[in-house]
Image 1 (cartoon, one colour):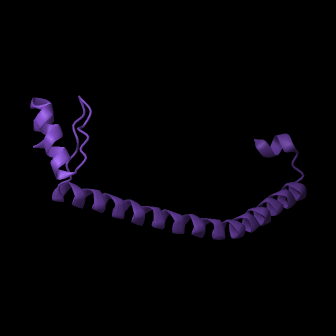
Image 2 (cartoon, rainbow, N blue to C red; image 1 turned 180 degrees about the horizontal axis):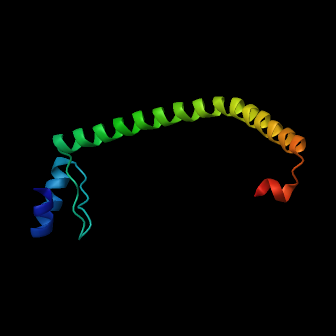
Image 3 (tube, rainbow, N blue to C red; image 1 turned 180 degrees about the vertical axis):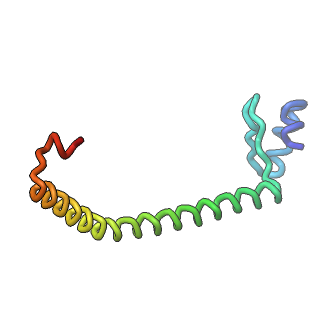
Length: 99
C-alpha cells in the first residue's frame, strides 16, 4: 500500500511515514521485487540441501580416488617393468614394440 501511495500522492506518503516513524524506499522503476512464497522457499531449501548432499558425495568419492591412486601407480610401475623385461627377453627394439 505504501508503494501505491508513493506513486499516487507523495505528500500523503511523506505525512504517513513521518507520523508512523518508518522509512520506506520504493523499488526501482522497472524492477519487480520477488516476494517469498512458501512453495518457493521450500524449493530453494530443497535445492540447497540436494546440492550439499551432492557436494559431500563428490568430495568423498574424490578422497577415495586419491587413496586408490597410490596403489594404481604401484601396479602401473610393476606392469611397465614387466613389459620392459619381456621386450628385452624377446629382443624387440622400440620401433618393433610400437607395432
